[in-house]
Image (cartoon, rainbow, N blue to C red; front, side, top):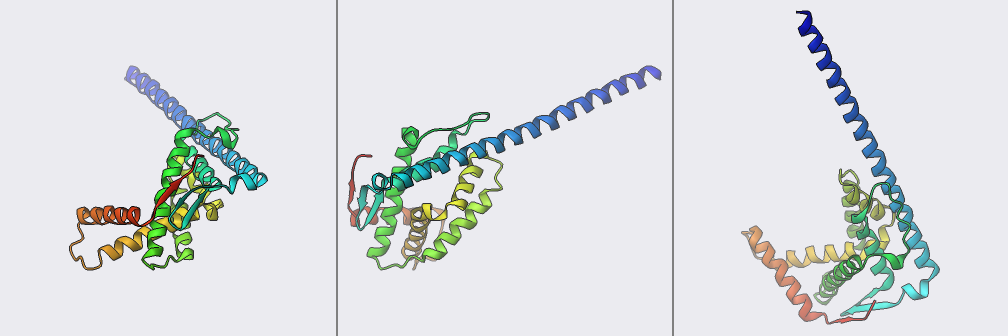
Length: 218
């Protein structure tokens, strides 16, 4: 009986040690996540300051989509937000704007073109975009993502909450798309996922046919 008590005692002690180290590792991981996010936010703020200090350069138009224009500042802002995807623990990201990885610039460029297409096409169809509603929706969505367990999603959400007007093209583009798709589905009763996807594709096709894209180098 004493032997079993001894074995149970050892097992309990080992279990407590495992629980302790698991809890400790969770705390350490959370602390590293917060440090990583803090470093990223400081880096983003530095980029914003550098763009403001070089306002003439970053106000350069790098593309036009019909009546809409895209500036270098918008490009680097979105690319910097996307750069949250490469957060590394225990790393201090002290990059300058010119050190944003090219894939993030390319992805930001494509996103801005797409948002501009929807905004341009909505205007051509005389569909109003409620800018306040669009920004409010973006803020609420970002606030929800601030609770995410994924560090890069949380970091990007914090940036969008702190700098809402810097991402207004994304907000306006999203609302324009929703309004355009709603118009496309106006007389459709059976709105299956397939039909909704086709409506999105048709809106994109019409937007591309309506709004000419002129790209410059960036």
